[in-house]
Image (tube, rainbow, N blue to C red; front, side, top):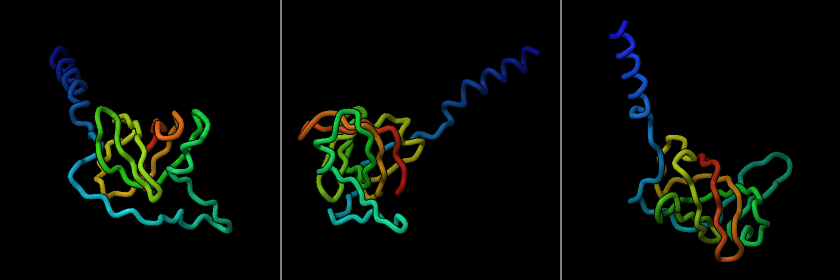
Amino acid sequence: MKKVMTFTLLALLSLPALAEKGGFEAGATPPPQKEQDAGYKGSEDTGQTHINQIRDFRQDGYVTLEGYIVKKLQGDNYQFRDSTGTLTIIAPEKTFDGKTYKADDQVRVSGRVHGKGEKTVLHVTQIDEP
């Protein structure tokens, strides 16, 4: 019985080590800035939100952006770019959901807006592929 309990305990303790870690992988060169299309939305084009539009959003406004994570700044801070400019995003490791993105991978980030003007940051709650 002790052997079974010991084996079970070791198996449970090793599970976090086997879990995939995601994040941002530096080294890739992001593609040049260009006009991005929101894609097909149905019978009515709903448009897309861009960085230059959220600089005056209300605090804690929820927004989704499409673009590129171009570099890691420090800690959970990253530089995000779309066709209209750049923005600092705060993306904890759990938001990557085990996936790793490079600078040339287009991503969709969703989160809450904090700050105004040039001090605007996005606290990311979800990152996925568009």
